[in-house]
Length: 229
Image (cartoon, rainbow, N blue to C red; front, side, top):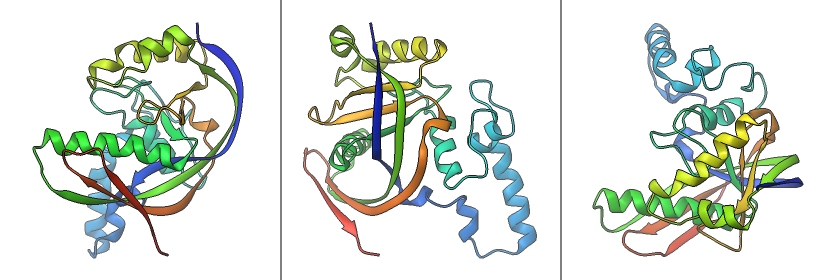
């Protein structure tokens, strides 16, 4: 049975594609104000984050999401864009905030999924992807899987089928009031990850450095470098 443990960890790392760093991509479009207004209205009607912030998501609503704090849109997006199959510790209806305790752990996790993207698309060659490192602090009681749960919940593949046991555990813990799960990284076993279930517990989200990840399709190699200011 998952153990409840006090975790205090400052400066955890979540890598987010740089293109999502702005409040809205519409901000950068050189269009007349009336056109932007119409596009913003359309965006609000189709954007999962904005729908949830206005009360249109039954899995997570405005009472849980952040409002009026720096980087609220970044945090809220992680809970309102869960993906069609969910992730390791969340289902397809409600997301979670994932982060690595170490930047190298976050790089390993992101690189794995980017390699899968290239492989699924039968894309060959070497590609560079730019990310923003979002830092956040955590302090509170979080669950950590016991040995048996680690065996069943931290299977490396096949994705997404290997998420079955961990999603079941996460849903059970969520509805029991859990704050989230701290667990060994699957893609870098010596690292540690957190999946936070509660937006309000993503404390002091802030932007760190920009990174470029260079990934070659069909290999396990990843090169990372900091983008100069």
